[in-house]
Image 1: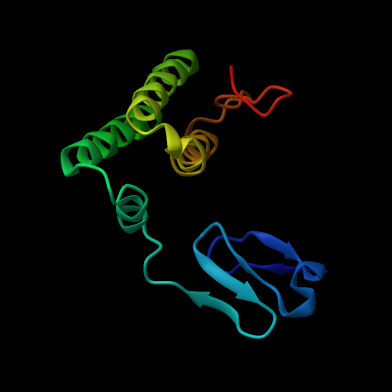
Image 2 (image 1 turned 180 degrees about the vertical axis):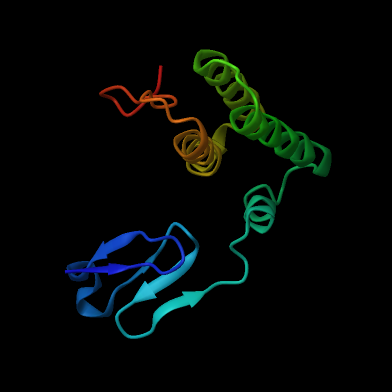
Length: 139
């Protein structure tokens, strides 16, 4: 049996909620058997970015956001080949990690997953964006 998120449709196995456990859904909501979905007000993109980059210079944060928006725009409204978009993402990742090497996991979960979702939704042509290798890394 599974519990489906009404916001994003993600399914959770009911056994995940044993012993009064709760799970934070990828859409930002906390899910539990006792209270169902409880929307958190801080889980929009801009608030999440501000929290992640709280100790970062505002100009750097704005530059990171602009680059992420530029890549998202390329995925949504251009016919740029997948390899060129992947190279842009790799260069963006390298730039961010040079400035903030401790933010690698957050970069992957926030931006790479965002780009993959956009690719799958708007440009899916049977080829995944940045496919992972056996080590969980993308080439």
